[in-house]
Image 1 (spheres, one colour):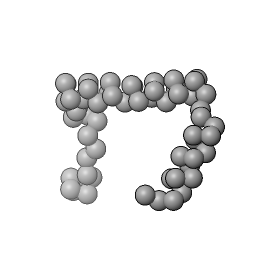
Image 2 (tube, rainbow, N blue to C red):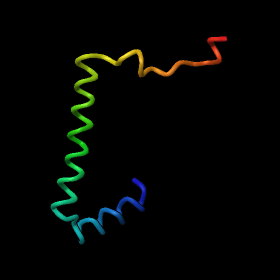
Image 3 (cartoon, rainbow, N blue to C red):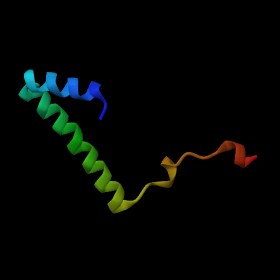
Image 4 (spheres, rainbow, N blue to C red):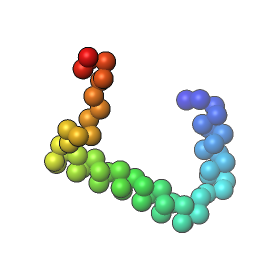
Length: 57
């Protein structure tokens, strides 16, 4: 483990984030999990898949 992470953890333990910030981060994680679940359930649409224009020539 990088010592920098230990210093960040120490600062976070001394000054924990506000409840609003915790709710904000939790909301972002929930949205990401919902998007992941939808992708697993319905699959990835072809129109969102990037095409390699170099191969099309």
